Amino acid sequence: MGGEKWPVLVYGSTERNELKQWILKFSLVDVHKFAEEYRMENICDDDEDDESIFLSHYEIEDEDFERLIDFISENGLIIVYFDTMYWDEFSIGLEVPDSDNLTDEEKERVFKFCEKYGMSKPKMYAGIVGEFE
Image 1 (cartoon, helix red, strand yellow):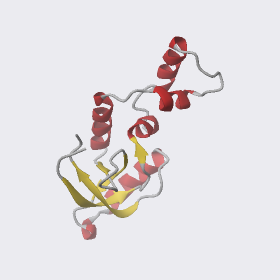
Image 2 (cartoon, helix red, strand yellow):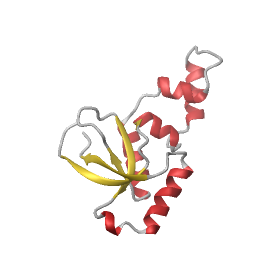
Image 3 (tube, one colour):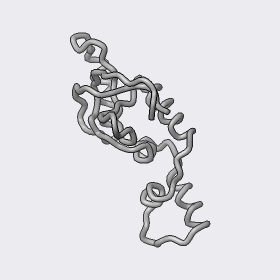
């Protein structure tokens, strides 16, 4: 990763995942179809479930990150990083320009998003945003 990065105040879940895990959580790829196709082309353990096959064997492509960015943007949220040295794991939240002006509607929207996708209860935290390269 490179490019400009800057600190930001965020309201959201502090759950951190890698891209593949977010794709799985938000159902941005048909995991069952991928696993079915993988089983047809490869020998694999019968006990391995679709999610495990996806997490172990799916190859991330540029479109996957774009798909995630579009999904997050449609929900009015941003990607948030926590460590300037480790860019593979990130969170998702609402950028808060001024903590005194965060509305109840914004809080409720983020809460419902987190609840819908089984994420931890949202809270205020600081993170890093910026270009993804």
